[in-house]
Each structure stands twice: as C-alpha cells, then as structure tokens.
Image 1 (cartoon, one colour):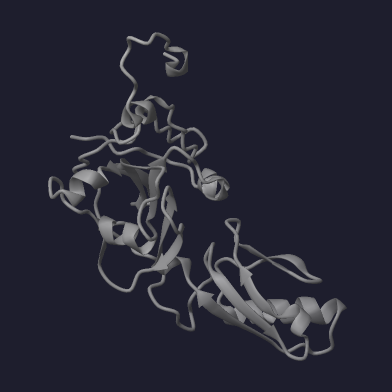
Image 2 (tube, rainbow, N blue to C red):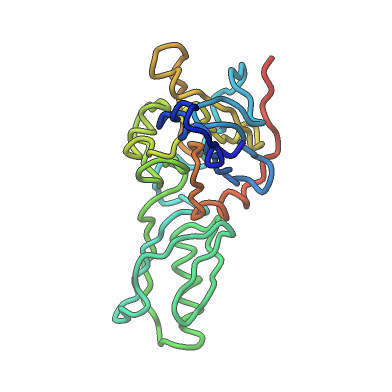
Length: 250
C-alpha cells in the first residue's frame, strides 16, 4: 500500500512511527546469495537461524602470537622496508588471495610464508631486475588471526584486536554501536568450525534486555548487523568467503 496516495479529510493523520514502519527495508547482500536478510525493521527473520545449540568455539587460529615461525595470512598487514629505497617501503595489506602489491614488483604471493622467507623472496625479485644486493625487512604490523571483523549497520565498521574474552554486545560497542539504520534484532555471526564456514543469527535487542544470553565472540569471527542501508565496502570481501553450511536449530 502506498501511504502517499491516501486521501480524505476524515482519515486520521499518520503518525511518524507508522510512516517510518511503512518504508521498505533495504536488503544486505552479504554472501553472494547465501545470506538474504528480509523483513521489516526491528524484526527477526532471514535464512540464518536463531537459538543455535551447537554454535561452538571456532577452530584455533594457526598462529596465536607473532613469532619467528609466524606465517602470513590473508588480511594481515605487513610493514616492508627496503634500505635506501623509501619509495618501495611502507605498509602493504595482504588481500584475500594471499598477495601483496608492491611498486615495481606488482602482485607478490605472500600467504603461508614466514617473514624471513618473504624477506628472501622480495630481495631476490628486486635484485634480479632493479637493485644491487637489496636489504629487505618484513614485519607483521597486524595479524588477521587475532581480530574480529564488524560490518553492516554500525557506526565504525572494521577489524578490532582480540586481547581477551569478548561478547557480542562488547564487539558491537567496539564499532561504536549500531547506527540509525540498524535492525538490532538480526545480527549474523560467521565462524569457521571444523574447517567449515558456519553462521548463526542473534537478537541484540533481546540480549540487551537480558532475555537472551550474550554469546561469546572469538578471534576470526565476522559480525554483521543488518540494516536498511548496506555498506558495500565489505560486500566483495564477504562474497569471497563461501558459506559452506548454515547452522540449523535442534
């Protein structure tokens, strides 16, 4: 029904709340069709189930500390310095394919390499064509295995370090809370368990009221708050993380 077409002086005026409720809610396209959130604002719904009984602790990250044998992972950020070549030095993010993009060299595969191995690889590549005996140093500036990603209708989407136990409410607070377009009753958590990408939905409103348990959030989790305006910056990222299995309530 189009409320703008209502006519007649005898009809009561619509309240602001009724008018807002009538507006269609934008869809959050998150996992290339695997996750489709539908419905009105501030309601539950969608294909990802609530009250999941076996949304357990995720797989342990391959590395829990930055050590000599730490292997570069997708979404890490590396600081690479080349002696006397500031134009080749700086912070380089590792993309989801495991590569970094450097001046002169272009795309370089970095995933699953230690910093020492990557040092040698970059030195060889630079020495073969551009520099004589290049001195390269690679350090891990930030590790994706120890962060939680928050996206969707929050005020400050991004990745946040996990330095201790965290709950869903605390993680949303790290992103400065939900924004004015958020539907707090549909919050998806994506997690890898036993090698499979899983998902479960949570009602943040019920959690805040004490009606539901505040679930534990772990490093490597991706938290997405549904809302009427999709933030497209993470759409491409999430599409590259195929949802192998959806949890089903028991």
